[in-house]
Amino acid sequence: MVDELLDDEGIERQEVLVSRNGTIISGRHELEDEDRIRVFDVIAGG
Image (tube, rainbow, N blue to C red; front, side, top):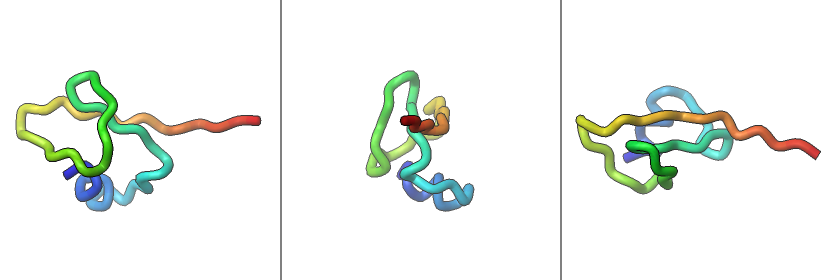
């Protein structure tokens, strides 16, 4: 699962967006070995 991957890497879920094969996914999605995963910082401004 995405949440497990982020926990293993010490990344806070609410601070990033995760894409699998070019599509933004939630933390509950399962991951496959062939998936291409990218993690993007979320930047908020005001």
